Structures are given as structure tokens and as C-alpha cells.
Image (tube, rainbow over all chains, first blue to last red; front, side, top):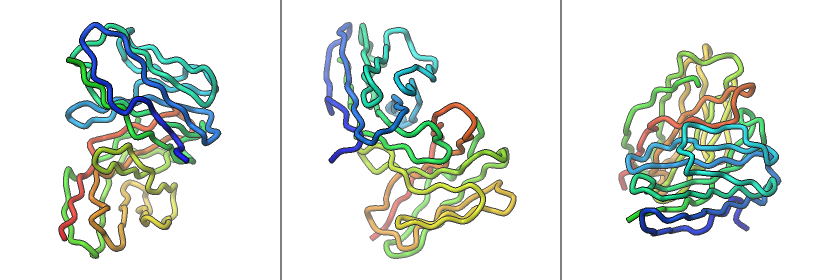
Length: 114
Length: 111
């Protein structure tokens, strides 16, 4: 029973297209995140939602729009894809007090823009 | 966000203990010390965390210096499956709800 699941696992698309990545967690957590890992392997946070409310929005282009229909889901929609968007995107979840509790990560979505 | 400093890479032999150091000289009183690891082609995985006292779990031990300015993750008997990038992260329980990853330590285990 996967705790944090992302779909799709791989996504290859052309520049200019719009695509979405879905994330679901079955842990009952109240906070979900999107991270981006680029080719140099740096993991950077993009967004965080707590109880469907956006609480972290790092410096991310407007082409990226997260959507949280409920506490268990956080989807990432990307408009007008660019070559530089190629990366692995990780979804994660935790309870709000991350300091005291662990975060669980999905297996990642490898996005390749050609 | 408080910063941590880790060696870029370390190497060890299978079935030997591994001590992964982390310096966090600017740690504040409410920062928890978290360790995560990322195996090849996988998402980060929680390893252990602590505040002041040393901690043990089934995966590893965490030794925290008395002044809390450094910590050491201890893998008691490394296996090939422990080869990964290990991240030491400080999280302020009162701060923004995110984990800020540094460059981590790439651990290589020799058979």
C-alpha cells in the first residue's frame, strides 16, 4: 500500500505543451509538498499546501500551478513547458509540525521536455 | 533556514560502521536535526531525527553534540543497500513547513 503515489512516473512531452502530475497520499497527513530535483541533483521545494491552503510558494514561474482538491491530493499543472523544466518532481507529505515528524516522499515523476 | 555542512562524499566497506558528520553551528534552540537519504532513482527517505539527546532506531543512530552544533549519523553495519546520498537538515518546528536540502554526502559502500 503506497503511502505517497505520483502519476505518471515518466513523462516525455514537447516544448509548449501543458501537462499535469498527480499526487495522492493515504497517510492522513495535513501538509503536502512539491519538490524539483534538477540534473545536478539539487532538491528544491516549490510549493506546500496545508489543509488545501497554499502556505509555501517559492520563486517558481507562474507557468507552474499547484491544485489541492482535498487534503490527500496535490496536483501540479505546468503550462507552456520549456526545456529547462526537465527534472524529477517529487511529491511529499507530512503533518504540519515537520520539525517533530517525518516527511514521506513519492517515487518521483521524471519529466523530459523535448 | 539554518545551514548544514556535510562532506561531499564518503566511502566505506560493507559490514563496517559508517559515521556521517554534519556541522550546524548556527542551529537554534527549536531546530530539530533530521536525516534523510536518497537511494538511486528513488525519492528521499526518512532516516532519523532528534533534538538534543542521542536517538536510535532500526535504521541508524544519531549522535548529537552537547552544544548541538554538530551531529553524526551512524550506520552500525553498512550494506551495499546503504549506498545513497545522505542529507542532514535542520527544521525549526516554529518556522515554515518545509525541508531544505543541501548537497548531502554521497556514501559509497565497497563490497
